[in-house]
Amino acid sequence: MKTNNFLGRDWIDAEIDYSKEEWETLIDVALELKRRHALRDDQSAILKGKTLFTMFFNQSLRTRSTFAAGIQQLGGFHVDLEPGKTYTPARKGYDIPYQTERIKDVAEMLDRVGDAIAIRMYGPPAMWRYGFANATMKEFAQFAGIPIINMECDKFHPTQALADMITVKEKFGTFKGLNLTMSFAYSGSIEKPRAVPQSVILAATKMGMNVTLAHPEGYELDQKIIDQCQAFSKQTDGSFKIINNFDEGFKGAHIVYPKAWGAHTCFNYADENGKVFQEADHTEAKRVNEAAKDWRTTAKQMALVDKQGIYMHCLPADRSQEVDDDVIDGPRSVVIDEAENRLHAHKAIMAMIMGGRL
Ligand code: CP
Image 1 (cartoon, helix red, strand yellow):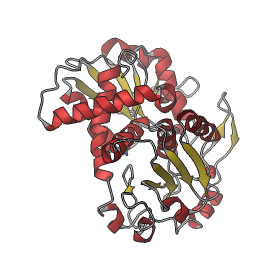
Image 2: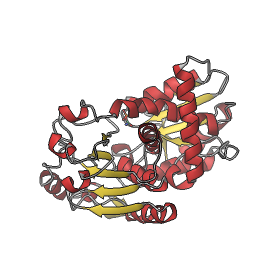
Image 3: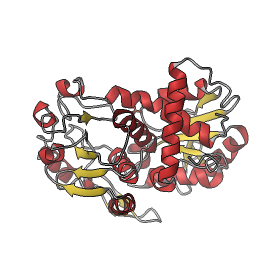
Image 4: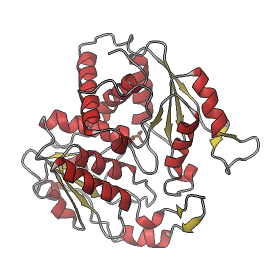
């Protein structure tokens, strides 16, 4: 267990920037905090007097409630800076007089006052421009000395992935030899970020699982992330493959994670200077989405998984579209465990990077 290397670090591209050993440490710390929480141990000395700023550019139930509860349980405070009620932080080149405030000024001010800034941004606040929200978080990190925590951007949802790995560890006790399938599932909404599938396949290959990514044509993920998954699976002696067949992904899986994300054509793509070189094509995004209506998890698919197999979803789920009620409410579903583990994951991250005394 390596515990001395966390203090002051950002948690933005965490599946890439933190080592396997560091992920294992965070999983251990989270499970220890969960155990102590169950025993009603007082944990309020861990981050006593520390302040977490949160900024949600998008809606949230789980992330918002568990960060707020988590910092309170660790003895700290939570200040929710609502973009739009405060001046909306803006990157250089995206200023609007008296509506926005340059990120440099926001970050440098908050750095003087608190101990970490946690941000959620994807979709409309980032103009559905793939990578814009991730770059926004990195601009905060450039100007704030205190840690920046990614609560979901357009590329990654690393706090969700950590909670998911904690859940897998609880259910199976190991990562080695487990078959995990991250699958596309149909939703009536064509605009959804890719953050969860990308983070889950990165974290699962990093931890050494045998990972299958299943999706219809048109739903390809970021090629750089696919390349990174291939590299992780080689390092850990796991495996990684991509298939275009829904049922195939369920066969023999220990973990299935069927979840909707946006088609490749639902995003705008821009170069480093912000110049858009490929605009979203919603006609094409709708066409591939309608063609994928049968990518819905039913009892028929769940009959194909390993006899110990579990159903995962980050929630919120689009019931009767992504999944049938009898699956998500059934005995193999661990979705509420995953949601609870967001609390323990966030407490572990905050305790380690904000200087907690465990
Ligand atoms: N899974 C997840 O991030 O949930 P919320 O959108 O409710 O925060």
